[in-house]
Image 1 (cartoon, rainbow, N blue to C red):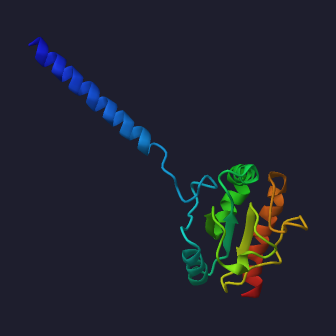
Image 2: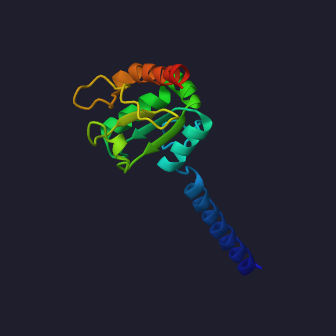
Image 3: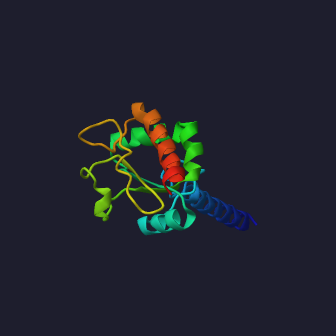
Amino acid sequence: MEKILKSVFVLLVATSFTLAKDEKATAKPQTLSRGWGDSLDWVQTYEEALYKAKSGNKPLMVINHREDCPHSQALKKAFAEHKGIQKLAELFVLLNVIYDPTDKNLLLDGQYVPKVVFIDPSLVVRADLPGKYSNHRYTYEPTDIDLLYENMKKALKLLKTEL
């Protein structure tokens, strides 16, 4: 009887360890938001983003960043915590990428991160919506988050007045 109890106990411990290990593995899945706004609807590819922008008549916001870049991480935190941006972002097609886009139209003034570019539903890159820096015109720092918010509003306003 004692051997049976020991066997059952070992089986229970092994099963609970396996279940606990599985829970840890699935506890925090990587989402398309990558922390930029988990409640927002993000698309997976640039091609999908362009299609949704055109077919849905919505502006597209492309955020190019790196997971190991402290500037990208700081901007991500400010973006995710800004209630106005999170609300306004619902009106955009959203894409964040951790690789350099292959579309040369997105390069604008060079390759750097973080970079935020707006594209209207006619698939025109809105070079007229820059940040405040002359050497990296489409970058934002956490202290520029209100400027990014204003540029998001402008992208929506241009959508109504130009298209």
